[in-house]
Image (cartoon, rainbow, N blue to C red; front, side, top):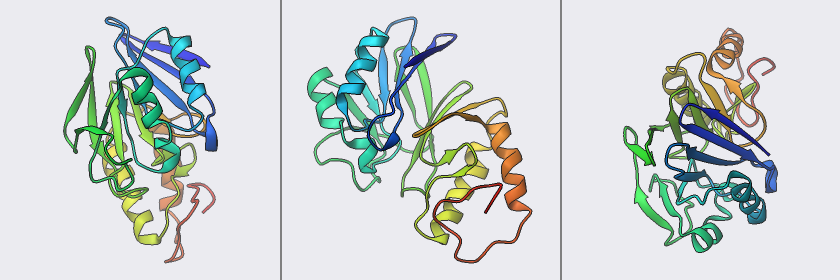
Amino acid sequence: MEKLVDGDLGIVRAGPAGFGNNIYIVIDEASGEAAFIDAPDEVEKSIAAVEFAGVEPSTILLTHSHQDHTASIVALKERYGCRLIADPEEPWIPEGTLDEAITDGDTVKVGGLTFDVVSIPGHTPASTAFIHGSHAFVGDTLFPGGPGHSRSNELLQQEIASITTRLYALADETTVWPGHGGNTTIGASKAEYEVFASRDHAPDLHGDVLWLES
């Protein structure tokens, strides 16, 4: 469990939870207002992260609706009264849990912090990044070394387009906080992608793709 503070933004990262998910809590250090990024399994680990942070999140910001990112939504809503904020086009949001619908170009507030809502479809139909300053919470769309898992070449191409046109438009020093594993930066990822883009690829390429090896 660790905490990073960058100006008024505090970030607690804990876990891994079930399926190797990261647990994130973002905090407005000025007001103490806080939000979860996603709601992975093993809710007791999220509760421990709350106790470590010394805050009670009032919101869940959902990057996408795969089960490993939604498993604790109901439990966190019951325990902390959290409001769920998500793109309603995500197909697997637990029924009756969505409190506020968002879409590309919106902003969401966590205390005095403003997060930009950026649509990054491909891994799922309406995957969403939440961006504040030099920090981007991207769910399972981008990892150190490559894009998130894709179920077809068409979806891989959609995901790559989201990465190259939306995420790579961010400053090179932007920290990428993925749903699993460690961080990367936009600059480091762009350099890896240049290697991938310089190669020819099978027309059915998809699945677990690595920029430097695929």
